[in-house]
Length: 427
Image (cartoon, rainbow, N blue to C red; front, side, top):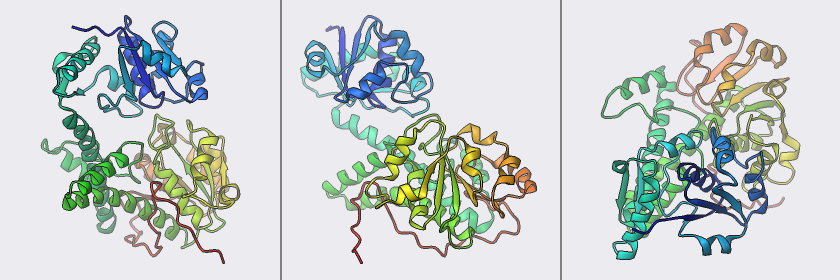
């Protein structure tokens, strides 16, 4: 059987970099070269400050960089030398979760490899299987045809996104009835037919994969004349958008129907904890909705650089003119962000937000002081926070017995980073 000695990966991003770093560590006899046209990104991979944050990644890279792991902009040379070429690892779909990517790569649920039924295709499949067999048990390596492989990737992310949208739809019902969505999720999650994974209600899912893959599925169904199937999966995206708009409306309504010129602290900008990735982050959408209402945002995230936050909010479809420079301030810590704020909004479930000195925060905030917990990270602190004096609003639960069921009087239009910006007429 043909033995792979040199691998080239085209694309040094969130998938290619970690995946090929782990391959290099687990296969010391194979030379792995990761190439990219972005010279600054390659320089970062060759430095002590990697271009992405992922727990455990730094240690993996440092263990084999310069030995059998190399990062380069010499794309043509790397391709010519390679026995196998990954194009951002699309030759076999990845099922990584950011924040746990290294663990997922070293101990995967499965590795899926799709190939043509031709002799050449099957030879390539066997060669790639041999690479993974350095550390993955053979029974966890699944081989399919190319269509099955690609559809499995789309379907897996669509099913996970569907579960999040499903529990988020129930969270709206819980807020209207007095139920607690966490209790509902725990009750249905104990059913072995359902299970308890991805039943965490929140302000909505983000990241590079879920929305992209569901929309790819929708497009594929429309192209293949399956409109009913397309509408079914489109509803997963629509529910996610509704949850974000509903949460933003709740903030505005609770602050006496206006946030104009009010300081609001946004805690967390990454789409989830343990990553610096902001792609499709709900924080972008919430920030956009609040900026449109004239709120002054003070944003803090422990892993997202200031430049990235400003870049995301300056997107043509998110803001216009000098909106960001007028309304957005990036804070160096959460206490600075909350100083003098009318409300603090938790958009990312960073563990550090559970450990903050909320009595100190409350003293520096304007009164009445509001907490809007979009990630249910403060559930265990509700009684303590209410004693301090906070008004708490969270997803899928009435915290205060005096609180009336929420019904938004603020209509927020739909918005997507995938859509071209709407041109407003000049007056």
